[in-house]
Image (cartoon, rainbow, N blue to C red; front, side):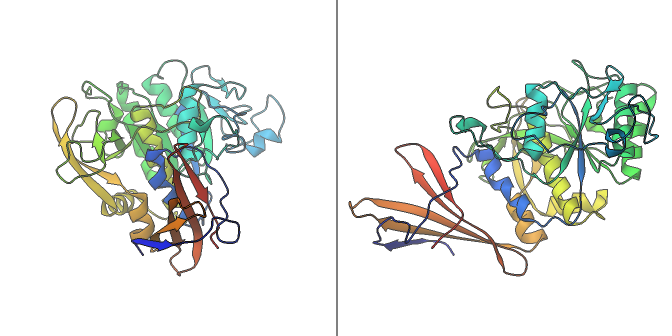
Length: 385
């Protein structure tokens, strides 16, 4: 249902209860919340090979994979026999030691937060108020070091993630060394075992021949910005601002108010985990999806963007749409209505009501949004009278 309905009603708890204030809404994140409306039928782990990710940030506490065999085992013993001693929280492939869970970094936090971050409750830090695209997954932490790993170490990290149960591997960093085909073999190993490797494309410049985002079996991601109609033949709301090459698979928004203290993070590093979270959610719904099927599902539920990249290269890129995936792939419905209300003081206020139904027609979520222009905020409500 669309359109505007007008009614003269006093704003009170009798008619409308406004609650769950969410602070500023991230434009890039708003559509992707619909992934959480697709049911969770399977437990999925996403491995993140990156900088350190916080164990203590409110959005990330409890969101990580833990190696239970090692946690309940004997210190100094490889209790699960996977070749890594005391890897309770993952592994540091730079220092060849267990993951140091007491450390944290803005980049690692931002990447993990876009995938799995929970809403936080601080009342005075609105820019940190986001929810990850898939808060139900667990993130396996793998440390890459202060610089990018060698091809041999990177390949070992990928194999570690596969062997320890990850179904998606997020690589938001750049490596161009494919010595002795280590990386190519590791990527093939992941695919053979039904694991999806999502890799960031270039932010600028060009790609050397050995770059992982050029591999056929990798899901390569370019970055976009929210710029309605800019440079687009089809009026898409996003525009590719990074670099395009013909091995890029998907384009996704980069500007997320990530949960690190660095504010708004940009770059393909932060577009890539958005796709990782989407793929993980689809696997939660159906973990039998293979690589070819996943590409078909994403392709059929994407919005095609066209234009030129920062180097002047023409591109045609697919942007997976969470709303299309929810409606077309899962079979849910999103119903929208606007209601104009006049309060006793004579001021008119427009509320946007959104009702989300599952594939069986049962209401699973209902929200009311009110744009308060005086405070430049959205108010979000989950219950409508």
